[in-house]
Amino acid sequence: MGRLELYIPVGKERLRCGFTTGTCAAAAARGAAQALLTGEFPPAVTVTTPAGVDVTAELTACRTGPDWAECTVVKDGGDDPDVTDGLPITVRVARRGDGLLTVDGGAGVGRVTRPGLDQAPGAAAINSVPRRMICEQLEAARAAVGVDTGLSAVVSVPGGEALAKRTFNPRLGIEGGISILGTSGIVRPMSESALVDSILLELEQARAEGVTDLLVTPGNYGLDFAQQVLHLDTHRAVSCSNYLGVVLDRAAALGFESLLLVGHLGKLAKVAAGAMNTHSNTADGRREALCTHTALCGGDTALVRAMFEAVTTDAALELLKAAGLREPVMASLTAALQENLRHRAGELNIQAVVFSNRFGVLGMTPGAEELLARHRRGEGANP
Image 1: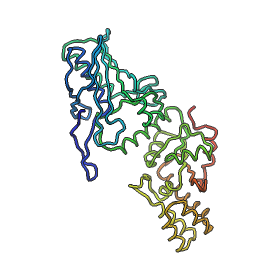
Image 2: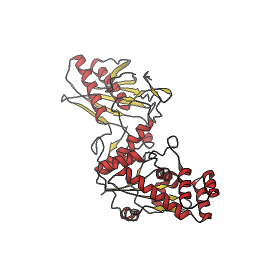
Image 3: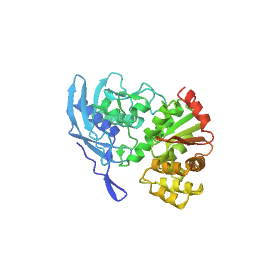
Image 4: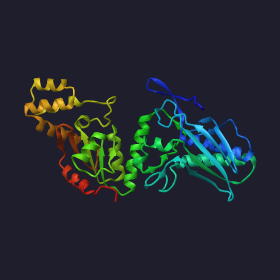
């Protein structure tokens, strides 16, 4: 397997970069095209990525047949925790009689079924930059031998259909396999960036499909509560994970009319304290927020100290219930939550529902009922 020896500093570490599925496909296409046109497989090929970095990829599983040749390049994800690391990317190149260079997907490469993505519905999920990279390598192969014969490249990924279930593809409407991706051709070990990009892509796709009223949850707790307790239509709900701030920014920029946020107290207490990235490595503040609003609502020192020492938010809610302060404290915290959401979202009509699995709905911003009704009727869903 080819290994890219390119390192970047990440925090206190030096992490090794890898190369994208798009780079794999381009390298495999070059090897297959060269073999088809010359009758010989090179042991490796070098591809210059859009980032300007040269990647030398080893070719494996090389085969030929009547007017076709096929090569495989194994994906190197570097130090990024990428589910496609070690995956074989295979390209079969065949002659065409019309002089054109074409790219398509085979087994294990997904097909686009919804608008709003890089490729139109019906096309293989091979994004524009990898398509261009593959065509450049096909052109280079035929230029090297001075011919202008047409060539078709079909990308396949053994195991791609099963692996796709562990990606965002099913949510995006990409069926039957993984996507061939990459804008720079290089995988930089920043998995958080990749996750954020996937979330923002869901927003863009929803807007392209005509969704105006957006339902957002931080994760599965919120999604399950929205479905099972609030009885909302969640088939186009977007999970913002820990990245609420960037989701609010993009939702406002895309022109959504409203956003309803349904989240567990453990997450939204952080937002009420002003944290728009709620990952525990970035911000916590749950107990500080709960203690502050408890004090604002008249809780004494003993109660505030007990709240500060509570291990879970449900334990804190038990203390508030015993003190007769659960409702006022939740109202105060929800008001702070609304203030921070409005400040970040600007003109976007944003409302929130705060819940706990044990105690149910704990708080709602003033306009939440109206948006709940819309999502129960499906007004904000895919037309």
